[in-house]
Each structure stands twice: as C-alpha cells, then as structure tokens.
Amino acid sequence: MDSVRKAHRRLQRYPELLRQCSKEAAAYAGCVIGKENVKQWDCDEEFKHLMSCLRTAAHKANFSMVPIYKHCIIGLLIRGCLIVYGEIQDCVSVVPYTDVDYRVFTDAARYVVAGSSPYCRHTYRYSPIVAYLMVPNVIAFVMWGKILLSLIDVLVGFLIHKIVILRSEDSMSTFCACLCLYNPLAIIIATRGNADSLSAALVLMSVLLLSKGRVVLSGMVHGLAVHLRLYPLVFSLPMYLSLRSSDTKSHGVIPNRNQLKLAVSCASIVVALAVIFYFVYGYECLHESFFYHLSRRDSKHNFSVYFYMMYLTSVDAPSDLMLKILTFAPQGMLLLVFSFVYSSKDNLMFCLLVQAIVMVMYNPVMTSQYFVWFLSLLPACVPALAISKIRGLMLGTLWGLAQISWLVPAYFLEFQGYNTFLLVWLQGLVFFCVNITIVRELIIMYNYDINKW
Image 1 (cartoon, rainbow, N blue to C red):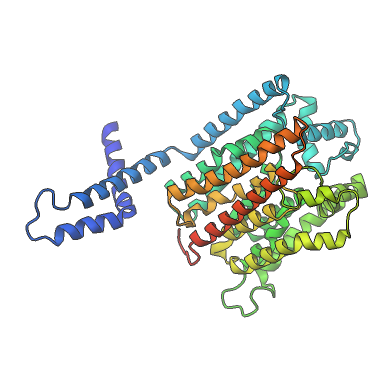
Image 2: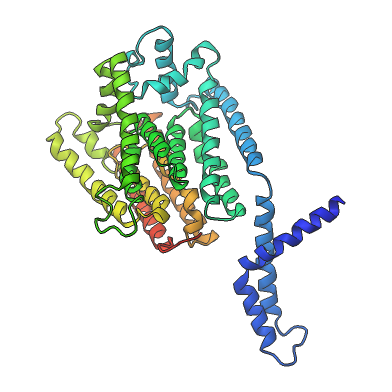
C-alpha cells in the first residue's frame, strides 16, 4: 500500500512538472503535429529537451518534498557544529573565530548581572535588550548567546519560507528558505556571535505581518527592529508607501487609515523603549545606542570606499557636516528614489533588498556582518528574478572573489603588521564596483510588473 501511495503522489505532481516545462512541451507537440507521417526519431531533439526539463523539475520537487522543519533542524545542527569548532579555534589559533562583539555582549551582560549599566562596558553601543539576552552567558554557559543567535538565524530561513509561500508554490518557498539556511556566510556570521540576525528576523517578520494585513502588529515589530538596530528605519518609507490606496493622487504621502496605524504603532514602540531605558540608564543609553551611530567616524580598515579618507583625516578632519553631506548624499538620493519606484505592495520585498544593498555599499563603515542586512532579504526575491543558474553562480562567484581579494591584504595589515592600507582601500573600490554591478543586474533581472511569482 505504501508503494501505491507513493505512485499516487508522483502522479499528482505531473501536471505541475508539465506546467514548469510548458515551452518544451509545446515545442515537442508542435513538432509532432506538424508532420503528417511521424517517424521514430523525427522529433528526437525536442523530446530530449522536454525530458531534460522534466528531470530537472522533478529533482527540484523531490528536494522540496523534504519538510521545511527538517531543513531547519539540519541548518541548526550545522550551526551547532560550527559553534563547537569555534570554541576550539579560539583556544588554539592566533586568529579567533568568535566575533569581538560577542565578547562585548558578554561583558555588558556581566555588568547587568552585577546590577550595573551595560554601558559600563566600553564600546557597548547597542540596546540593553541585547545585553539582557546574553545574561545566560554569565550565569549558565558562555555559548548560550551563539546558540540563541543561531536559532534566530534559522528562524530567518523559516520566515523567508512563509513570505515566499504567500505568492509561490511550496517547492519554490522551500528552495528560497534553503538559500538562507545553508548560506555559509550567514552561518559563519551567526555562529561567531554576531547579533544582526536578530534585526534581520524582525525585519522579515514585520514584512510577513504586513503582507497578511496585520498592520498594527507589523508596525510594532518594525519599531522593535529600529530600536535594536537603526538601519531598518530606512525601510519605514517603502513600507508606509506600500499601504497607499490604489486610487490615490497624492502618491501615498497623505496618510490613509492603514498608513496611520503603521506609523503610530511603530513610533509608539520606538519612543516607549527609548523613554523606559532613558529612565533606567540615563542619557548614556540614548547616546551609545542611537546618537553615536549618527556621528560615528571609524578609521579602522573596513570594506567601505570611504575608509582611506576616514583614516587619513582621523587627526586633522575637515568639517564634520560637510563630510557627512558628501558621504550620505548619494546614499540618501538612491534610497529615496527606490522608495518611490519599488514601494508598491507587490514590489516591497525587492525595494527593501536594493535599499539594503545601497545602505551597505555606500556606508562610511562596512564590515562583513552588514552583509546580513541584504543576504537575509535576497532569497525572498529569487522567485521574481529572471536569472539562470549559471548567471547567478557567476555573480555570486564574482562577489565572493572580490571579498576574498580584500580579505588578503586586510589579514596582512591586521595580523602581520604590514602597511597595506592603500591596497586595502583599492580592493575596497573593486568590491564597491562589483556591488554596483550586482545591483544593476538585479534591477535588470527583476520582473517589475510581476503580480504572481
């Protein structure tokens, strides 16, 4: 009976497989119908193309038959192995695996446990919530935070599955989720103890809730995301515009009922949390977690095209205001343009993706952890991209090689003490050009008028 049930399930999948290979099937049918006396090998080439397409579609379908929760378990096990490996590398290697921010989180949690402020820890510039989440690092075991952040990283993959399945079949949603769950860069960043996966999960959760019409709850989650990390604030405008009425003549600027719900619920959470922590920890909390990031100048080497300028002017800096205008003006203009061009409900996810990439590549400070900002959004946009496997692999390889080419001189600068500042900056320019190329390709490949993926 089990074999009969399996055969029945395979038969149920045939219409879907044929739909995916409709062009090849039409070509084969046209060849057969167009010949009066069809011989055995007359349409052999068309038949081979059809069979090849069906095999590929069946392979994808078999992959997606694995339930999403099993992929989540596998992804979590992979992350668990890397957490254990990271502890070993920290003990035996000169190059540590654990992110320096994770040690900062743990130290801040130690101050919290002692009844003091997390901001007693120098360079702790995050919401107190992050320190609260890391308290078990101090009272239980030090790997707790990495396990929690890995769980949240797996949640990101699950949320992608939920977002894509609203517009596409289950096989595509599982595939998109796996792009996140098995992404080596995202896995490494999470298992090193970086907390950006928390913000990524909240951004995706707010988009999912907005897609389901839960506007107030979406605004509250978005407000929490903004409180934890400032970058989701940029997504507020396209989210707001995506709720505009279809018959409006004001381009969505004058708010309707849903737009007011989103704005008020988001602002309420941001203000409420800011006021609460201000009374608990004073102005230092607002300065370190919010205002510092608006005035930050970092002269340490990073991927940013502005790094060398920041390094050379770290002592005799020109006017701070003029410098900020020069660095943020290009970014601000692009973010504003994308907000209005791609902010309809159907295009919202793609809008957030290109905005995240622009934010990262034009930022005065750019480190590997910032890549989570757009890598967590990219898989949800894959169904709307007209891209072949080869082209996607080429773009991914190009991006990876550009990153590696920067990491080599950066390693010699940081760990060997060689003066490679200029080379690091030049490789940063190359990386910037590669990112621009990828954004251009994504815009070209995106199906702008898509209604259903």
